[in-house]
Image 1 (cartoon, rainbow, N blue to C red):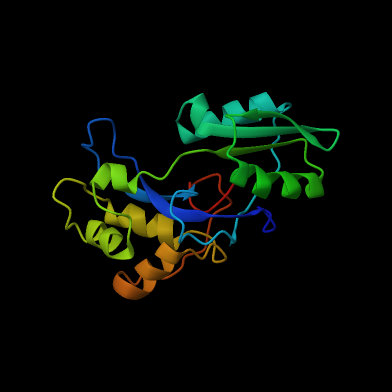
Image 2 (image 1 turned 60 degrees about the vertical axis):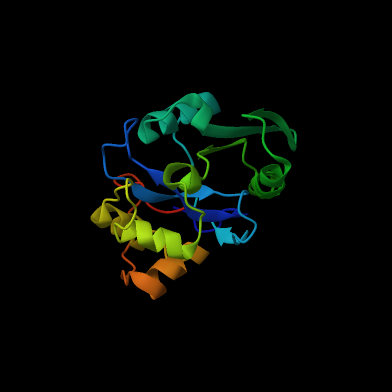
Length: 193
């Protein structure tokens, strides 16, 4: 993984893995977050080249790896120094972060997991450090979190992925030691696009 990805508003603002009936324990996952104004917008993302022959194939590969549908995989395609295509239609803030970075790198496309924050929707609680810690401590009446998987995901994120919530989790309530991160092929940890 390359360490010089775009700086984005990334946060542990999604509870993933619950299943449609919420019978599975979930875990906190990183997402691009333009919803919460207090999110740092300078979290360093990691990136890598795809070996796929086209941006469409790269998008399908990521969709399969993430076990999601096409609308949850974002893409911008650049031609002649301009955005030629974007799927889905990007908010201006995301375009402002991704386009200059991709153009500077000379990339023909950027593909990423395009999931939204959902902590508030899933828990019916506001997204605050205190409430995230309560969920991680199993104090929510209906949402269950897989503590081991949450620790692997948060603690296993690359060290430069310093978010407000990660700092709160590590210093205010759950003292998880940072772990070495994988190359991204075995686990789904880290802010990687």
